[in-house]
Amino acid sequence: MTTKRLLLGMLTPSSNTVLEPVTSAMLAGLDEASAHFGRFPVTEIALSDRALAQFDDTPILRAAELLAHGKMDVICWNGTSSGWLGFEADRDLCRRIEAATGIPACTSVLALNEIFERTGVKNYALVTPYTDDVQSRILDNYARAGYACVAERHLGKRDNFSFSEVDADTLRGMVREVAAARPDAISIFCTNLRGAPLVEELERELGIPIYDTIATAVWKSLRLAGGDVRRVRNWGTLFREVA
Image 1 (cartoon, rainbow, N blue to C red):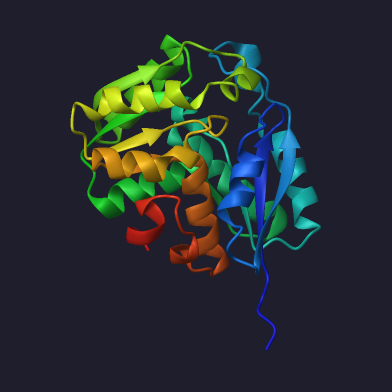
Image 2: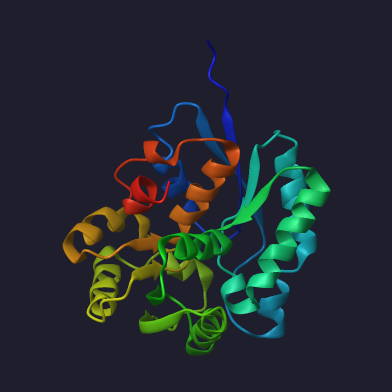
């Protein structure tokens, strides 16, 4: 019997060099699943009009429509912009993608929020590469949604490519620092950070669930496509325990 293929479409910031290899590595143990990527222009993360305009729907929807030519089972915005734009931006984007393509849509951030709800997270810690004002906007949006941030660390960076060059020891240090506050969960919140490959080891060390936003995108995309997330092994408790 031929196993149905699971085709996962991922919308990707143009300057991102992390989420594609990491996503593919997560899916390596699932012969039937593959990720396919569509890019649109994103080079800077900031609150200026020019930076915010990068997330206008038009180029994103064009990228989604091109992915739809490959008959994807799901299309996911694998990025964290609604952290500072507001969660409704992602909900609206999903509606527009579904209307334009007829394919179920999801996002990294909405998946993270669903995971928080499913696991009963009340307080969390946040690790990002972003600037002070972007970080503050993310914290405000989560506070309005009822989540208390008990610890946060950010790097003050705005060039999206530079996020991919943050080394593993820096990320380990940031996660360990916020873990001291004993949050219900920690989020590594950026899909151009190399956090996901560190989750398994840091969860064992710290005893706290860590939800990386590349991982949340894969988790939700697989679920919508009808895959078994428990088959994604050695990438953290998310795939074992939030099934």
